[in-house]
Amino acid sequence: MVLSRLVFSLLLWFLYVPYVSLLEALGPRAAILLTRVTSFLHWLLCFAGACRRVRRTMKSVLPEIRPDLGVWGVLRKYVTLKQQHFVEWYASGSSRWRGFLRTFCSHIEGREHLDRALEKGRGVIVVFFHFGMARMNISALSQNGYECLFHEIPFLRYRGKVYPWAARAIMKRENEAKETSGRKAILHSPGGTFQALSDALSGNSIIVLMADGMAASRFVELPFLNGRMPFTTGPARLSAATGADILCVFSLLEGLFHHRFIVHPAISCRENSPEAIEATVRTYVEIFESYVRQYPWAWWTWRRLELQPDPDGGKRFVFTEIAMEDPNEGTRSR
Image 1: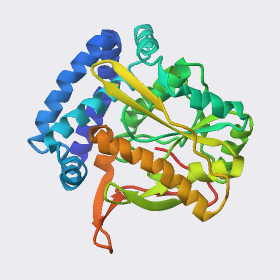
Image 2 (image 1 turned 30 degrees about the vertical axis):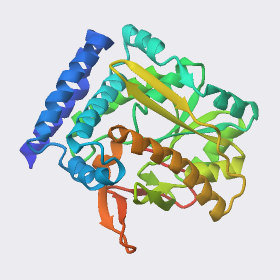
Image 3 (image 1 turned 120 degrees about the vertical axis):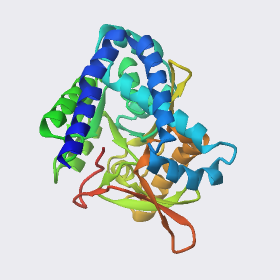
Image 4 (image 1 turned 30 degrees about the horizontal axis):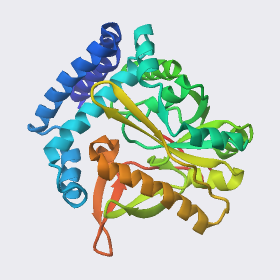
């Protein structure tokens, strides 16, 4: 146990510190090409047992939603996207990387939806999902002059799985990536988060929430990928309480370098009732589901799911880890 924890700590320390520093020094184009090589090697390791949970879940779901795609092909794209997302998020601190972001994160499709929502003066709730180049959305919005406030819960990544010195090094790198992205945070405060988010919206700010997060105060279970899955109600409850519009934002990786950022038309929840809140969540979940069906390799959450039989004969997607919060709180994000 001690040896395995030490090895895991050393591997993660190497990944987040020396390796990320190397990628910064190489510059974006060379670093991304290197990532394609390492992601291919990672994919080969899957034949020896790596990504076991991801493969198991994909084998159960893909034949129903995309019978035209093979599990191994989807898995290869999944590993590639995850590695490039990691590289771009953590290694983008140098001037060369910032230039890369200005070039490839400068165009946002549908930004007029965001501008119209801001013109109402009620703030905007931007919802991301654990999908695609998700965290690069913040960089893209920042590059286009939109200042975002991200609801964040401070925590030590891999806490309990690595030694404290490794967790601190990883957190330091995480904080550096946040500063580079231009991301500003509303830190979670038990008993006060919902009010803090509401106050920010009253100042016509853009707040960012993860709409498929595992950590939340309230969930509603909805149809998803021929089964059912819980989704947080936080964005809908905030919209009902403040009058702010909800906008879904997605980012897709196309080719080696090109990023496609898409803002969908506004969704609103104008009635603070269980029925209206569920209907609002259902609306943005249906948009999200359409992306997962079209680009299944871009959904990070394959590795966090367990499938359980549903009493009606279907299946339920259950997160392997769900952190619960006080019922009066807003959405928590991880």
